[in-house]
Length: 256
Image 1 (cartoon, helix red, strand yellow):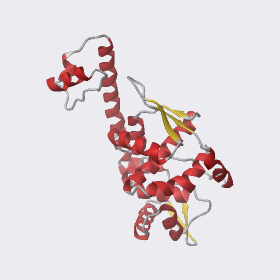
Image 2: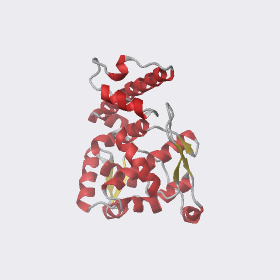
Image 3: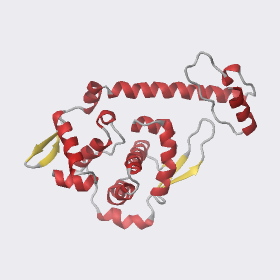
Image 4: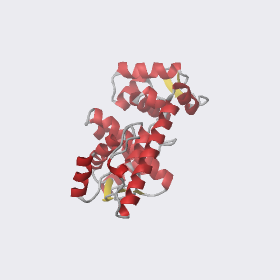
């Protein structure tokens, strides 16, 4: 895990930067992959798009588009080994190819814990999240110029992000270098800024959609299709889950 994190900072972040704005999302998605990998203590990942969406504060459809791009950009580090079916998500294998081993082990491991997007940064934005991470996990307290080089963002953008986080007492400047203010609780700050409520709303929405999907699968497995599978007058929005039978799928959409 620590070697993979070294490769993320030394190799992959620079590669992701070549993708423009998409690259920022790829950076966070791969951080999320590593965070789940460390939590589950496994290099086989079978986490659904909605779970990643909650972790990143994005829509699940966006995650579905990002995962193939991430697989391509990581060039053998992340590989899909099984396509998801029914209630199961796609499965991915994460491993360190031999070509990266020497690079990873030449670098010392970084302090701290890797994160996806913590709730407070749903409000403050991706640029602030990467800037905060660079301070938090840096090998030493960085200057503003060092943060510009590390993140790849413009000096004006970094200066604005630092000023906002300083006003929220997340960071402080000491002898020209930026430090984390450890006494500031990011969870409390997220609640104050309204990010916690937004995250919970997303979780509630996805739980409802997942329950609808599982119920549809259960009914379909029994060979019966209820009228609500085609049209539900009570629902404000309803999506028809995909199925392997293309003719049936077209018939459902036509009826809807």
